Image 1 (tube, rainbow, N blue to C red):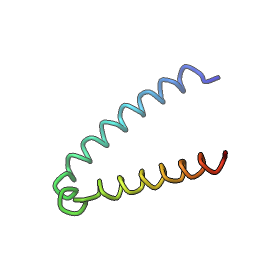
Image 2 (image 1 turned 120 degrees about the vertical axis):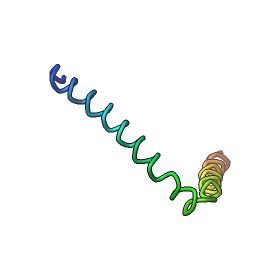
Image 3 (image 1 turned 90 degrees about the vertical axis):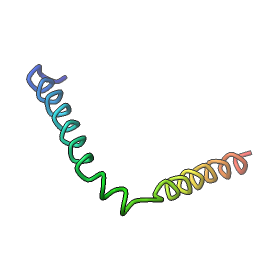
Length: 62
């Protein structure tokens, strides 16, 4: 399906992308602590909302 060159490029790109993202995240870690504190609450509410939608679907399906 893919040639060997395409697969090698994909692996190299993936590895370099992950390394760059790690460095970028570490560089901005101080800013994340200032501007994004409490964001886990938003994630929790979002996951609870999705769970509620699945529960409503499950109970009204019967």
